[in-house]
Amino acid sequence: MMNCSLEDILSKENIRNALFPVTRNRVFLAHAAVSPLPAPTAEKISAAAFEASDWSQETESFFQTITEARETAAKLLMAKASEIALLGPTALGLNLVANGLPWKPGDEVVYYPDDYPTNVYPWKNLEKFGVKTVPLYPEEPGKITLPLVLKALSSKTKLVALASCHYLSGYLLDYQEMGEALHKRGILFSLDGIQSLGASMMDSRYFDFLSADSHKWLLGPLGAGIFYCKESLQDYLSPTLLGAWNIKSPDFIAQEKIEMERGARRYESGALYALGIVGMQTSMELLLAIGINKIRERILFLHQYLWENLCRVGWKSLSEGFPLERRSGIISAFAPGVDPQGILARLKSQGVVVSFRMDRNKNWYLRFAPHFYNTEEDIDRVIEILAYKE
Image 1 (cartoon, rainbow, N blue to C red):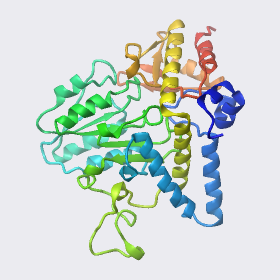
Image 2 (image 1 turned 180 degrees about the horizontal axis):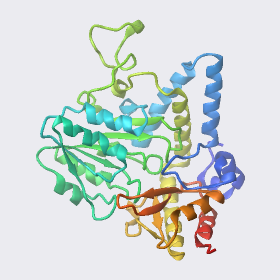
Image 3 (image 1 turned 90 degrees about the vertical axis):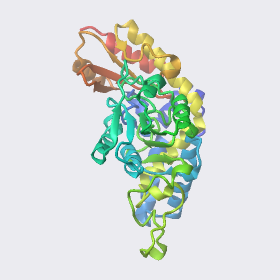
Image 4 (image 1 turned 45 degrees about the vertical axis):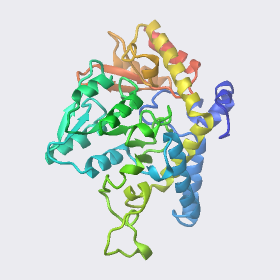
């Protein structure tokens, strides 16, 4: 079943239902929030848990899974396995960057204050150490462009910390253009990648750090995640969490001298989230087997199909003016005069799962986030509910 093609999943409902049990009774369009687990992922977690009940959680098969998960995550990022730490949630990785860099008073970090809070607080916290936070104010929500960032830079800019995709507007950052420009200026680049990883390929040549939990587009468990640190920066980014796993401790004996493990393992201070990594690895393998580029194409198709039909029934979206290459799987939509809680309750009562979100100005949105296994029929069902007049 793991080797099914995208075409098989979309054309054979029995295969789609078997791989994604949520499709049997629901239309799930909230992958930008917390995704349901694919059946193979749930089965692997269950099998690993059962094995742990009969022996130990630290089995040979688990340690093999750790190795495989690093390698699989590296493929998603076009990176080396030695650059991958198996750490979630996203906040953990972002704080490793914020707290591990050698900041000096007067250094500057550029950030977006209307990003998801997880990608705001670690940088704001640096202010108490004398670091200056430089906010970005785009004309449209989440629309972070290179000219906007360049205007915010100075000779003291040390880091630019952005999201690969904005959680509300769905604007997909041109991280390649951004990374090239920043690296030419000797500026570090950190990404919150949770709204992109699993939905599009990421190329680690263009960023220095990336943090992402697996529970959104990666279709993995809550709390399992990936932290990427470029190999050339691993001696520069100091581990701020120290323990028996990332400091060499032969025979479980503490040493006089602190000697870090090699590679990104230096950031894994303690026991890893065994069952979560088993699940994340299974989901990553599933996505790679289908093909990330195919997944990206499918998501864009669903975005366009959903957007056109939302317009037809009088809804507007934050992503309407975005060029195709800057669109993601996220569509945050609203309709004048509509009671959002009422329509949300109606969708829920008919088995449709979406997210309700608000911006800083208290404007409300229904956030739709279809993944590759959603169908046009799923979208049609949603539009029918939205168009219904009592």
